[in-house]
Image 1: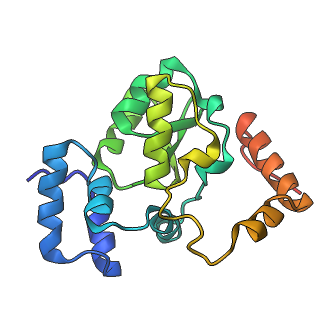
Image 2 (image 1 turned 180 degrees about the vertical axis):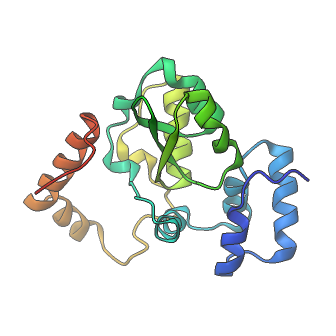
Length: 196
C-alpha cells in the first residue's frame, strides 16, 4: 500500500485512530483518490477544525480560518494546476519562497512543490481540511463563491457552547472587526508581517 502522508502517526499518538484502522484508511485513500487525511476524517468522523488547530500547534505552523478570508483573492487561473495537483491554495510567491494553505503538511505530494513552483522554500499555513476542500472546489470549478458562512461544516457549528446571539455580538465588536480588517488587508497585500 502506498503511503501518501505521515498524518496517521500524529493521529495515532493522539489516540484518535487505532493501529488496525490505519491500513484500512490507507487502502480506502488509495481506492478513492482522496488524501489520507480526508479519508481518516470521513471514516472516523473527526472534527476537522479542531484537528487543524492541533496540527498547527504540533508543527508550529500558523492556522487560518478560511471563513475569514475573501477567497476571490485567490482566483488566478494560472494557479489552478498547482491547486489541483497539491490540494493547496497558494498565498504568496517570491523568487525563492512559496506560502501555501494546506490541511496536512505531511502530505508526500507537497514535497514536489519546490520543483514545480521553482522555489527553494515552502511555508505552510494550516486550514480546516473540510473548509479547504470546499474552497478548492469553488476556486477550481469556477463556480460562484459561497458566502463564507457556507464553508462551515454544519456538524462543527456551536460546539463550544456559545449561542448565536453571543457569537453575533462577539463578531460585531469593534476590536474584532478591526483585527479581521487588518488580517484581510495583510493577506490581500501579501504582507510578510503585521505590527500594531
